[in-house]
Amino acid sequence: MGARHPPEHRPDGVRTGRAGGPRGGGRPLSERLMTMLPASALPTLEFPSGPSPFPFPVPAGATAPARKKVHVNATAEAPPYGRILRLEELLEAACVREDDVERVLFLATHQSCEIFFAVVLRHLQDVREALDAGDGFLAARRAAPLPVIFRTLVGQFDGLATLTPAAFEAIRTALGEASGFQSAQFREIEYLCGLRDTRFLNTAGFSAAERERLRTRLEERSVQEAYRDYTAGGPDREAADAARRALLDFDEAMALWRARHAVLAERFLGGTAGTAGSDGASYLWAAARRRVLPEVWAELA
Ligand code: HEM
Image 1 (cartoon, rainbow, N blue to C red):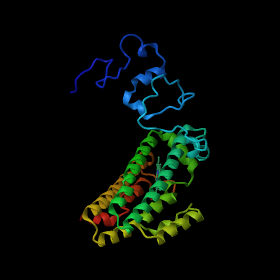
Image 2 (image 1 turned 60 degrees about the vertical axis):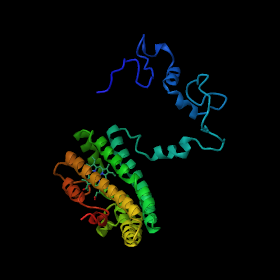
Image 3 (image 1 turned 90 degrees about the vertical axis):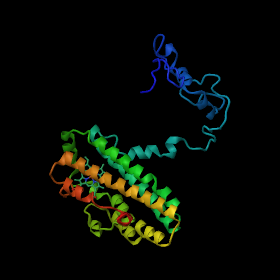
Image 4 (image 1 turned 30 degrees about the horizontal axis):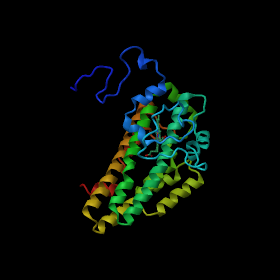
């Protein structure tokens, strides 16, 4: 057990403001925030002269001494946060303004997954390039965020699990035959890696453009082929180990995403069919056995 400290002090000396009267001693929040910051946190910011860039006045003394300069809107041309992220268009496209708040959660979660599927595809392309260039360390670096992304997406399933059965049922009825099964990007991930079941090309609901993208993926070199050639070329042992570990971490995280998805489907559907007409949870449990990079696993056998 750690040592106990009086409630008004933390071990690092930061005052919590609990002792001696009302919380914060009646001082404005801005002042309290500044005193709660350790002194070392302040010099990393140099405030421009003129009005405070923060939504509260910056007390005198918080400006000096600067060790590192952070430019706050350094040039007139530098676009602000919202424009860089194209938030207006993004939120216009996001299903966050629907009336039913549970439907908002359901749809926005799917949209967020699709954004991350696109990010995963970008990284996988770079992994393939790095392997083709014979750089196992770079391949490992490019693959490193992938399991983290999939774990984040698993967390999003936890959010959907908070829906009530009645809310889910209402959403599902409105979905008709629409399903994540029609996620072309998810199939692209499988195809780009090397798991290439061409039956999915005929998935009902794919647009002509999506089908075309999938066909292109089938013609492309897969990550697995790139990995196979890389290892056959007698690479540096340490670099090859790093690449293999990173790819396994990714495939493992994807398998766990699939399993969490199956559990979620079981929670809402029981033994009934999915909206795309599959066997529902039991289809997803079977899909959870799929590995997108089977040859990387086979090395362990
Ligand atoms: C309550 C939430 C969810 C339920 C009950 C559910 C259920 C299902 C079911 C039953 C299937 C099988 C196909 C079918 O018959 O419809 C499926 C497939 C799929 N779903 Fe979901 N899903 C949910 C959330 C999500 C989310 C948030 C995503 C993220 C994009 C997603 C992506 C997918 C994908 C990619 C497939 C195809 C999997 C494969 O074929 O291996 N699902 N889902």
